[in-house]
Length: 455
Ligand code: TRP
Image 1: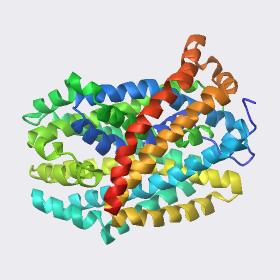
Image 2: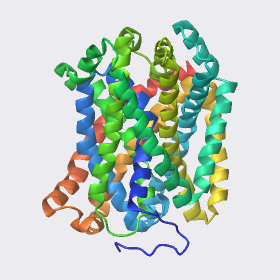
Image 3: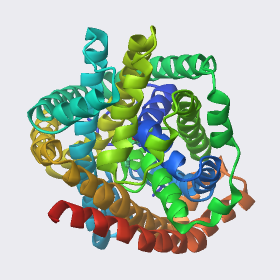
Image 4: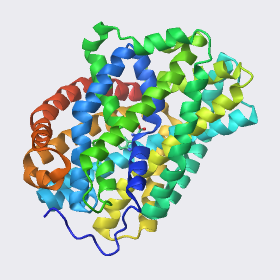
């Protein structure tokens, strides 16, 4: 059962590096840059980072391993995979995954569209340099027709990459963009060390206020962030692993992906925090609020005008948003691939037809987020937080209980017997209760977001 024959036409990754780059590309996204630094700022800086790291290690890593195991074992998209491995009752879970991909990409693409706009406008020198102007500017390009236009352009690029297939589309894009992303990111973090007053930023970021470690809101935020950032809970990495052949150690690859993802978020903080403190923005950013006026605000409203006051500012801002665009694109293609691979495997459509038809559907759904940021925020809470946790919960039940023996067989030499026991133990006894609690704590945020939408 562990090795199912791959369909004769089913493509695979060209190389192991290509797979890792693509998987890291999926994980590293807008979540690492704006979501992470913002929630970290609100969540007490270093305390949040510690909690986040714990969720990555004890919940994220075992689940990530499980997704890779299920995907490679099945050699088909999650919708088919769950049915094949666990029976027809599990098929709806695969369908839920595809719906999450659709839902997340619809608003993700809107934000990604802004990053393109900001890159171009920074280079053209038309971004406002004063705080009030920056806020008006974001209001003008973030919501309404300009936002629709950039969203549609971004979706067109994403669809184009996915129609290229695994090797020529996903893998090639990741191999080109990811190294560029790392170079820009490290360059920005190194540049930030030259800012006066940055020391307070590093201190806030790196010196924990221990009291915050026990704040349930922050614990929940850290868990949600770990999920979103690692692309967990909707079969994205399961889909990517279904294109893997061979018997390489999956836990090792899971560790590589998790470390790369954490490092990018962490290094992004090493850029953002000195900037926040150098320009005295801590108060502006520390105000509580919703995604629509604050998470986004940090990156798109508060930081650009501050940086633009420097001679080199234009280039720093352009490099920053271009890096965000690269990060967003390699994530967006994984979200679309979950949907596309499901459609190819279940209905037998061609890749091009699946990518174009479903890409357009997502583009249409995204119009709602492009014209209404409260809708965007509500989608992020519903699909990007609550449904992902539910998906993670179902995955842990699947691997921990339903197909445990097969999963253990698939992982074979990838883990020592002791670690294999620990992995299954986490899937059975630790992750489900933790996720139930975190889910319960996430519901109020969802309710607030829905209220804001209708209120
Ligand atoms: N991980 C990406 C980010 O941090 C977003 C993403 C891509 C994602 N694919 C996903 C999130 C699948 C959840 C599930 O921005």
